[in-house]
Image (cartoon, rainbow, N blue to C red; front, side, top):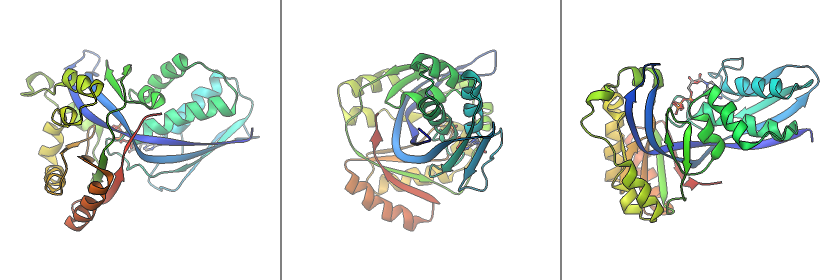
Length: 288
Ligand code: ATP
């Protein structure tokens, strides 16, 4: 086998709670993670020179060791004592620095893709622990199904797929640093916490209304304060018929949940006219 292609799906957080700041600076979180049908495409090939080459369609992305794909490929090649090199072609569609785990999911796809290409036969458990060395969201992106995520994000409990619905995902023309958001979060004095246990139960009962009514993200307390446009996008999605709309991760991406894909398509036209968003996708939940 000389070449492998993989899709790397982005994620949204149906619910995101931060429980506390830990002494090591990380935060303990409690989140419901969901993959969505907005994805990057990666092509992996073996090359003779023992190096890692990354080519991408987005100029602003690093193509050296700062790219999470590079970190994942290096980890894999060291683990497998590979004598060959790897070239990776990345077609980036997931918005960058957007709260959709774009870098983490590329790293996860690299671990999975190279395990196959290099015939590593590394078991899932070990892939998950390799993933967390790259980033807290990488194990979830390896799992690729609805999950409760705890610890710093690496303690995963798989859940059933939620009922099908339409999604509209919109990102304004701003970049948000995850580091800035967590540094400015007052985790101990949050006035409200999402009902993640209730959302988990609603997912198990396939109750879409029970899920959407519990959607909440405590990081909005930091990000919307700095970027009010995020609140405006939420409002616009609700006005366009969303059952509910919230920010994903540390933002600035907002997702709206709609009763059907058709309704999300209609709302897309309205959001496009509003001028509030730069990138806009109609999507659905993905569970592999
Ligand atoms: P998260 O939801 O995990 O916080 P994010 O969507 O906020 O992630 P990313 O899109 O992963 O953020 O990008 C954050 C930064 O990581 C970018 O500024 C980018 O320079 C860097 N980066 C490194 N590798 C990648 C990659 N393969 N794809 C996207 N960004 C990458």
